[in-house]
Length: 242
Image 1 (cartoon, rainbow, N blue to C red):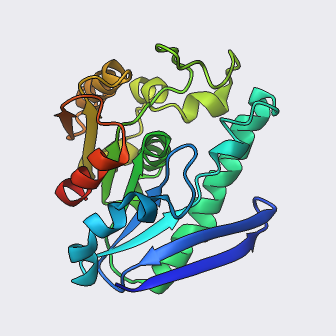
Image 2: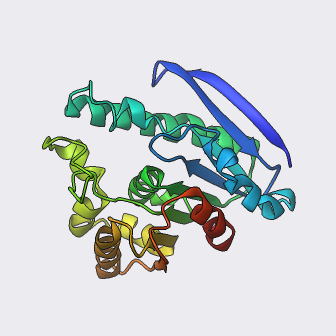
């Protein structure tokens, strides 16, 4: 399949950013990696090859980007307020650099946003606030409240809370979402979530599902056996749901 490596200096992030593009045509898929994953993670995990038939057939074109979590939510040397601001700058990069690049390379009218683990959170948070940009959202093994303490997973904001955190936490801002324009577009989007039955964030996924249902937003939540929070599970999920 076609494979293209791209790199440029982002004025928004003040650093070089890299990505990989797989395929030549079809629906565009914006893919967020896990918290420690790089832009080549989905290639290394075999997720790209699991979608190989669709990519080679021109049904999908994959855009695998950096996640930058090590400079935002998982940068313990940054105060929490700076972590969320760095994440906001990263989203600005995605919206104003990556998505225009995708549109310039491929005129297909369908853009899918997808992610695994922390990448699922990034995909969900972005798509729920910008639903006009995406036709489909696919989130594997996600945690949709980064302030939630579950098992060994702590509050990534260390108790800090402001509007930036609120509006980037799906389970916080959804109950108060009243915009008819945004709700109508969310109701038109295809939304797919998966989670393992033994995943620590199973209840968080159920909670998000209830909130979506209360807003009349159609979606599918698929439960997988075990924890299912690893590459071998995501390889099987990808061709089923993307």
